[in-house]
Every structure is written in structure tokens, then in C-alpha cells.
Amino acid sequence: MPAGRHSTELPIALALAGLLAAASATRAEERQFETRSGTVTVSTLATGLKEPWAVEVLPDGAMIVTEKAGALRIVRNGGVSAPISGVPKVATLGQGGLLDVALDPDFAENRTLYLSMSVAGSGGAGTAIARGTLSADERSLANVRELFRMTPFSRRGQHFGSRIAIAADGTLFFGIGDRGDRNRAQDMKDHAASILRINADGSIPADNPHADGRKALPEIWSKGHRNPQGIVIDRETGKVITVEHGARGGDEVNIAEAGKNYGWPVITYGRDYSGKEIGEGQVKEGYEQPAFYWDPSIAPGAIDIYYGRMFPEWNGDLLVAALKYQLLSRLERGDDGKILGEERMLRGEYGRIRDVKVAPDGAILMVTDGNDGALLRMSRTVGQ
Image (cartoon, rainbow, N blue to C red; front, side):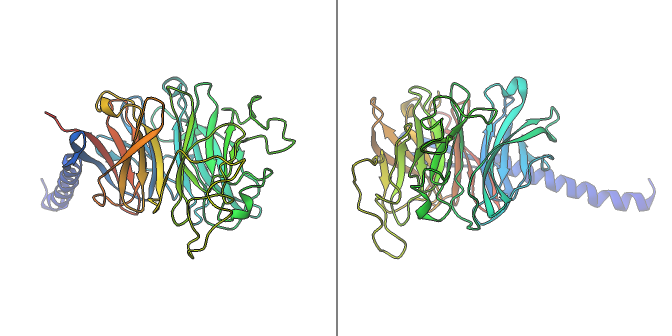
């Protein structure tokens, strides 16, 4: 081999070996923690993600992750793909950007997925929902179509929501916050501070509570939600369960029912950041009470319901990702669905936890917030 070629290839080979070693180290990084159910193992599946916001599991076990700046990536066997092309342009304004990803129930056949994001337009920016088809080689999105765009837009950078949950009938539920303006929260002709519901093609379900659009925008399912960043549908009951940010205290879990009002900012268990009271107290006729609330706030990022074989004692319990205290909250539920107590896990161990998702095998996936975000997997420790 010529000397010049050898001297070039050796550093490259050493660099590649280093990268492979680093990837192996990432995949092998495991830590154990004690919980009320025994020892769990948390494995780091990937690092270096840029403000990851959401994770979903693909049919073959790989994971698809959103990054707030606008990238959609595949994580497989410890490797992180290049950004998938064809993702709609997002408005990275404050808390806005590329937010949630949800897989169509028939994704294995149609490769359709849904995205929530903030987009720019007249008046500033607002939350939108789009759908697209992931190519077989996982490199691009095709047939991208915007299904919904909130109204009105604003130039504020807060409270875009927005998770997506797909019901058994194929309709899409998603949340939008008050966009940093509490005066919008009780306006029924404003999409802000609402849980919304649309069909998979963007049309209005005929059984929406305001489908005729006379008293409220037809997409609105429920109202008075300050900033719902978590939403899940209980597969056993069909109920829509949300988690939302309060102000200084008053984070809430709500059972979002059609046509009901959850009170923000008329009633709340939180206070303004100045310390002043908000609204008219904590209870008022015509407004719903939360199923659970936190004071002080934990800054909830997402919610899922545990149904799985790995932790059968948790079946039916709520899992909530928390940003402020950097933890995973497990809310124990009784047979009637009422919340009985809380267990806080992983506090301060991995930073701000943005998303939580129960994987098909019963393990729990999480993504951590920030410019060096990680994808984590929590499982029962072998032998427990």
C-alpha cells in the first residue's frame, strides 16, 4: 500500500473505531434505581438530540423522534438518522417548533403519520396539524398535507400545546394553550386554550359538541385549558385525559369531556408568577374540577397510561413527564379511575423529561429536553 494512502486511511479508521466505540458506550449505558415496585434499569438509547419533543415506536421497534427546531429522525440500534426530508417548515418561536408525532393506527400498511407544530402566518404564528407518508427507506415524507391551522395567530412565543392522541374511531384529539394571553381562554370563537378534535382528513366530526359552529368553533371539544402539553386516550374507557401547565402551581390532570369548560383563568389552583391570585378562586359553578393537581408546579411535559406486561402492578396508572423537577411521576389509579397517590421517580437524574411513552414490550420510553437531549428506556431489572 502506498505510504500516502496508508497515512490517510489510518486516522479515518481510528476515527470510525472511536465513533463505533462511542455508539456502543451509549447503547450500553445503564443505571439502576429503586422504585416502589423494585429495581428498574434505565438505558440510554441515544444522545446528542437537539431539543427532542416526542417519541413514537415504529412497527419494527425503531423509534421516530421530533426535534423542536424542525428535524424528524429515526433512532435504530443506537444510531440516529439524518433529518427526514419533506417535513413542513416550522416557526421556531419561543416554545414553538416541531412538536408531537403520532402514528396512524394503520401505519404498518399506509405509513401515515401526524405532526403538530407551530407555523408562521398572518399575525405571527400558531399551532397546526399536518399528515404525511413516510417513505419505505425512511428518508422522506411525501403527500404532506396541513389538516388544521389555529386562529387567530399571535406574536407571542408561549403555550402552543400540543400532543396528538388518536381515538378508536380514528379521530384526532390535540391541545392548544392560551398562547400566553389568558384573555383568549374563554373565547369560544378562538382555538386557544382548548382540546380540539378533527377527522383524519381534517374535516369536522359530526358529533363534536359544536359541530354546527354557531356558538363555538366546530373543532373545539373542551375549553379553559391553560397549556395542555399532554393528552392520551384511555383504551379501557375511551376517556380523553390531559395534563396541562398551571401558572405558579395549579398544574392539572383533567378528564376532558365534550362541551365542558375546565376553568382557566376563571378558576385555578395556581397563582400568578407575581404571587397575586388569578380569577375568582378554585371552584365555580359551570366549571370542571381537575382530576388531580400539583402545587407547587412540576411543569408536566406529557402523559401516557401504563398498560403492559413488564409492570403489571402499574396497569391503568398515569405516567407524567416533568420538566421542573426533572422526574417521572406515576399517578396510581383505583378501579374507578380516581387518582389515589403519586410516586416520583428519577428526580434530578436525567434533566428535564419532555415526553413519556409506553413501548409495546411494556418498557417506558422518555426523551429529555435540551441541546444534548437523550432517548431513555426504563425497564424492570432482570431478576426482579
